[in-house]
Length: 99
Image 1 (cartoon, one colour):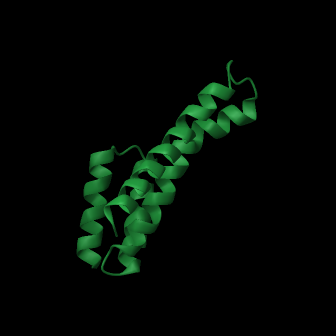
Image 2: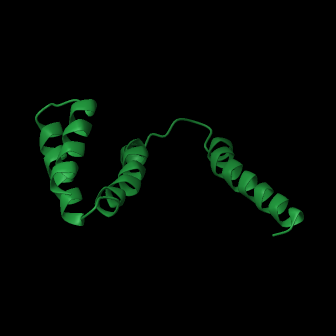
């Protein structure tokens, strides 16, 4: 790849990133009053994190079954009030034991 092509790719990345961030701020002047849209926008960061994290949990472990077991046990531990660090340690231990 030539230097000119790299610069064009970098500029296009800057442009698309800024359009995604600036365009909503310029088009939406007031606060959003629609409850459905507010709830969707509230959960977007969590959905994005889940979409990036869950496939990696299954695919990066030695076997998919150890990742799935760690995921299920981690969800159960979090459901019963365990914090982020204990859940991470428990999930790592499950993958280590089953892998």
